[in-house]
Image 1 (cartoon, one colour):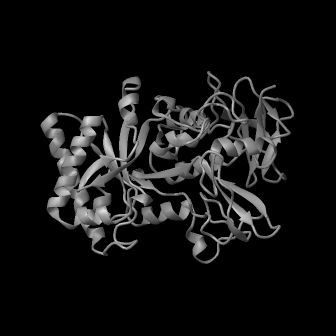
Image 2 (spheres, rainbow, N blue to C red):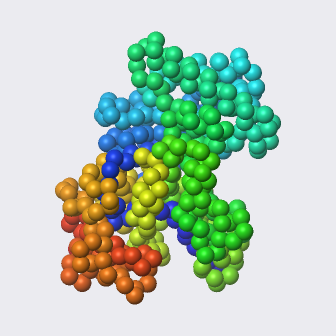
Image 3 (cartoon, rainbow, N blue to C red):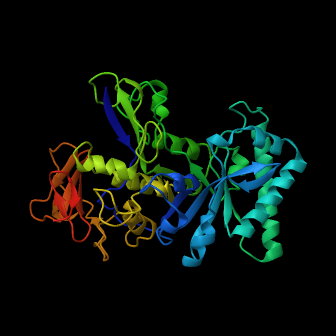
Length: 431
């Protein structure tokens, strides 16, 4: 058997061209605290200035009232004092939440009112700015068909209660977001919608596939044509959902497979999930910081095509933010063989979430504090990759820079300050 990695579109050492005011929403998972060292991750490990929004996951429910999950650490209580601009959200639900509690809650108006009141009290007590309803999935997975309409009603009632609470307290209205498709009416009421653009492929498939395909691939036949970010977002847009409410989510992890033949291409046949990650302890699921260790030894390419994703978002005017699942899977300690001493998403946040400059995607100037950036293929370098296969190439004139060839386009990058391009790993490394 062979092990094949298909990691998410995650940033290694190249950074994204700056463009206007994007926000970065980071997920904090309460179970990361239980991983073995050095994979443990607590609220104290979060840089409060890294992201614009922090999503604490996942709360649960009992007797129609919202409750923290067992062992849940309410990260917002710790981080708010360190960054007054940080928006703290609490997510409730997830796949493991099941359907019964939610079905019971929305089935009766009195139950729904109890839930909404408990949400307002809980968010206010713990310093959260809003709630994300990650209910998977109303009207399916064994729940009654009418539950989808009941969910729609609960959305409207919750927003009305949030608005009334804001009038009474003179505080900003609590935010209301969701990670599931509702009917068109309530979708317009949500502050934003979390597109679950991930896990398009995984251990449940009979062949390999990227878990976060941006576009349909050459092997995308039949229903597989729809398993990509582009189709998902265009479907929602064409269904009448305002594109500024759509938030694309990316993951800092990879899915692994055991190959059943010597074929290592996309859609190669598999016999099941790959081995467990050393710290995630979940079959077929590896954290970013362990994938980069393998990349250091040459087991996997080290650079991915985030510039293409940024271009896609800008061209289609989708949303003002991106989401990252999850910050505890990032190299938060700087211990990975591929990292220097900062989060892999720090550059992502700096150059996308808080970047300034042209909206046209022109090159950043590199800034200070160890930022890297892209020259965007401008100037005299635009034809460097002409005739070259997709991949990473050293800059023959400057060891601190490198080129990436993507679909006959040229991207010119300068690395993090103090690092040089290393041809052996095709990454930026210490001299």
